[in-house]
Image 1 (cartoon, rainbow, N blue to C red):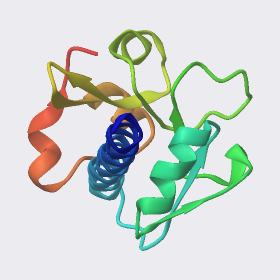
Image 2: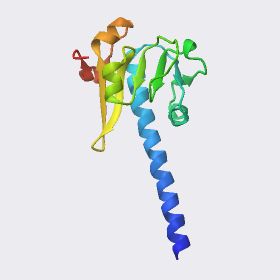
Image 3: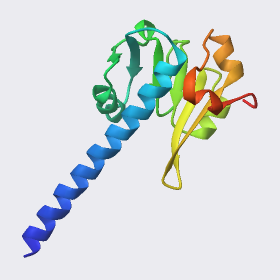
Image 4: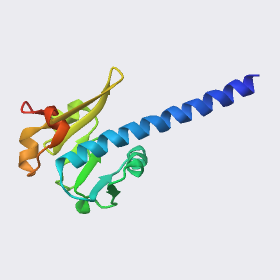
Length: 139
C-alpha cells in the first residue's frame, strides 16, 4: 500500500511541475512577444530549469551565446559582458539590474509581472497589447 501511495505522489508531483513549466512558458512567451515584432525571438537562458521553460515556447528559440540573443532570461546575476535586455525572476534583481527590462515572479500563488518604461526605452523596446498595463515608470 505504501508503494502505491508513493507512486501516486511521485506521479502527481511530476504532473504539477510540468503544469508549472507550461504556465511559466506561456507567461514568458507573452512577455517577450509583447516587446518585439520579430517572428522568431532568440533567448539566452543559462539555467537548466529556464532551458526547460524555453522548450515549451513556440515562437522562441534558445541560443547558446548571449551575444546572439535578443533577450536574456536570468534567475540570478550573470557575470557576462552581454548588454542585452533581461527578464529576471526576482524583484530585488529587477530594481538593481540596469539591464532588467522586466520581471516575472510568483507572489502568494499568483504570477506577478512588471516592466520598466525607462529601461525599455533605453533598449528601444515598447510593450504592446494587454501587458502594457504592467509597465511602470518607477524603475
